[in-house]
Image (tube, rainbow, N blue to C red):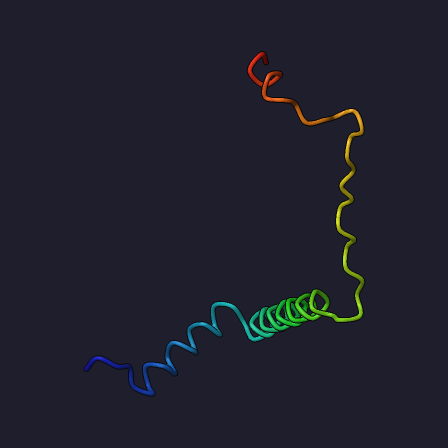
Length: 76
């Protein structure tokens, strides 16, 4: 009693086809497939081993910045 029979599924499919039409359903499935393919392509593009990595940021030291002595730290 908890599951649908084959007849129930056929009626549900028939109602869906009547509401949306065969052309609209096939268009939706085609768009869905294109979206999945685009997603997979995007994942493969990110993981491509031949793509150059971004260079690390360069850290430059300020020559005027020097370490303060404990006396200067106490004064501010």
